[in-house]
Figure 1 (cartoon, rainbow, N blue to C red):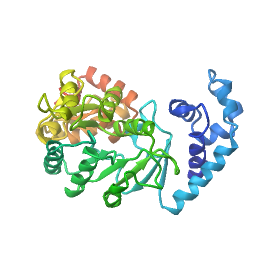
Figure 2 (figure 1 turned 90 degrees about the vertical axis):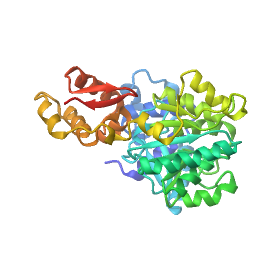
Figure 3 (figure 1 turned 135 degrees about the vertical axis):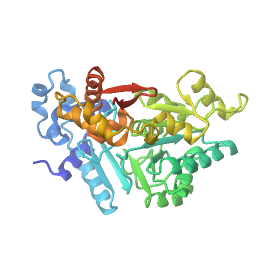
Length: 374
């Protein structure tokens, strides 16, 4: 039996083994079943993973990584920080499906990282009055339309911090994903907002303490922002910037991406306008546009449970029946939401939905929504 503490220790240690990387670490844990097994049985790994490089096996003989991981565990215990390993049930399930997902996360707060509805709002660090007003009006409208949504951003200057503050103002939980450890807040001027977020949301990071907020860490951080959410919303962006990287990552993870348009001559609308022009983001003008596109206004297409029950096939598998029951209860849903609700991996969910479509039980609507047929 693997204890949580053991798995946390070896998961943290694995992130510090030279030459492994995010994708390599995830593969090792996925194939071996746990980080503890990876370290304790490293010499047997070639039998379990035939194409593993011997260099990786040798690199795992790294006692200094385990010692450093022990120090990190001492810190998070003292600060009441949660350590979420890749096999922890509270680890963000949407993020788990990404190839380069981190194998361990550190979280302080009270948000449900597997909330039914999760979006991120990102944009330029040089937000204009137009951008800040968009954040305010969008989240105010969203509270009325979808009051259980979790708002994610990066606690950075500009659009990020305005998204967090407006979420708090509208009593929406909000999580900041950091590019450093939980032993500091950067930028420091956002400290008060960060503290407020602990009571309605939280702070999340993959980085250990004593990690500097270096430039490359922000790019790494962006993949978590994109991967843990159903959708990315770019509010304002110049022609180049971190928010466009987040949008690109979201597309790679097969997440939805949206952007607010702006005047063609405005520097911080050029990135959004390009995303829309290149069909890399759908244009939205309001929270109503967004909720409708995501199918989060499930009441618009109610499905009568009794009609569905009459149409069920006797040969539905247990997992297929589970999907049908969820759709019958909640109405049309996207695949990412179904993955969370049914606790079925996205690859398997895709195959199950295809089978249900072939059986005439569900159909695909615009925006990738799945709906039961009567």
